[in-house]
Image (cartoon, rainbow, N blue to C red; front, side, top):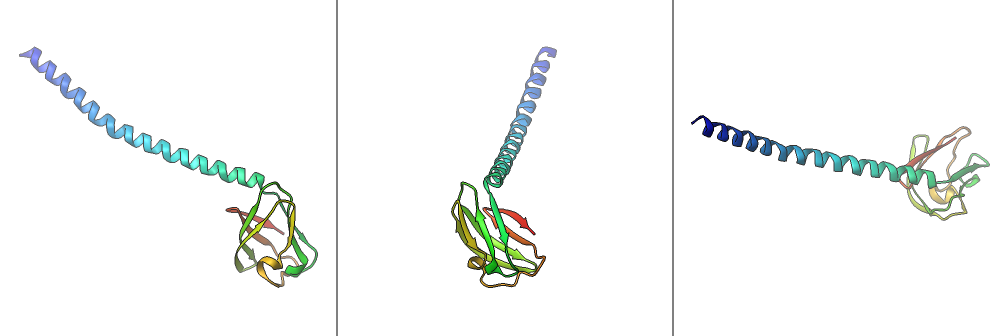
Length: 129
């Protein structure tokens, strides 16, 4: 009888171990995929930020005296321009080596003397003083 109970106890321990292994495997597998997706997204944002090469040329205090120059090799899409407390939702594409007036994006607007221009370009925010 002692031999049979040790076999059953070994089978029960093996079954419990297997039943616990499956949920743990599924949990760690999903955790791995979540982290992989997050790292991939972070890498893509970093690569996008490295490829974005833009300059803001401010010649005056008005938007028609301020220019945006894309000196990089990729097309840029400006989704948003923030000046002070004013938010302009735009969808404007700038090709490589293209220069455009800021007024083409937001219209005629008084920027002020020391205003900061914040632009959302290809999903990332960039600050220009």
